[in-house]
Length: 89
Image (cartoon, one colour):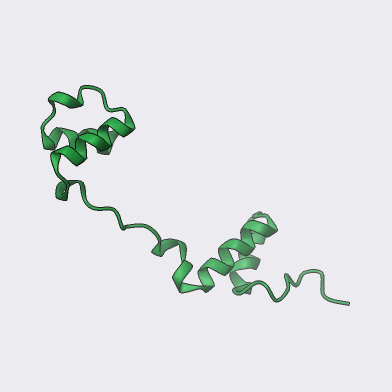
């Protein structure tokens, strides 16, 4: 009979899994995080960062984004004001 504490072969990083379980994470959450950290391509800290910087966008693009997020008074804003509004929205 298998050890009940052993999470099984599907867990890629057993140390991370055990630490997360000890901190109170569910089995599913601990497994998801442990496996993501074991796989460099899926590591949570390496996701994102692909959006173009606001400073590199045109006023028209910024205006469109401001409209999408509901920035009030956007029609009279300069590029700098749009950027500031988007960052605080």
